[in-house]
Amino acid sequence: MKNLAWFVWLLPRNAGVLLIRAYRAVISPLYGDVCRYYPSCSAYGLGAVQHRGLVLGSVLTAWRIVRCNPWSAGGIDDVPLPRVRRFHVTRVGIVIPADWAGSPGPRGRHADRSGRRRIGASAPAASPDPHAGHHDHTPNAHTVASASSRSAAPERSPITSRKD
Image (cartoon, rainbow, N blue to C red; front, side, top):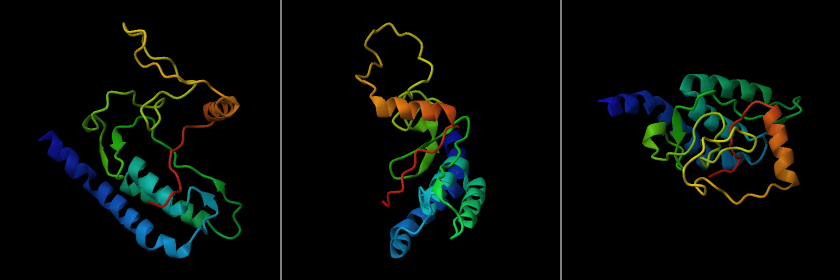
């Protein structure tokens, strides 16, 4: 019964996601790269609907489209993510509840899309296995610089402008 309730609750959001993906596949290639912002307005709309829902995502997308005009300077403008992520976005782009995703990785503010903790996030609780959760990662100058800029700014959506 709970699964049916989640399915019904997420149905409008996923219908919006499918409409935006259809637009990006059929109509958006006809225009080319004309958006002044990164990610493009359609990618922003897709992320806004996926992470914020159909109503608030549509409002954020409409505001972004209004700002995308010849007199705008443009720049990087990511979707503001909610504080707590209750949903998971599949590879196809469909939104499902986080507990359906099946990945026991960290969730919330300090996890990126891959499920690994971001640089600068608080360390997880110690586990009995010393090699559990260990990643061979040597930070270089670019990683450290991007981590410091990310820690100063609010967390944003990891959307790319790729048209898939």
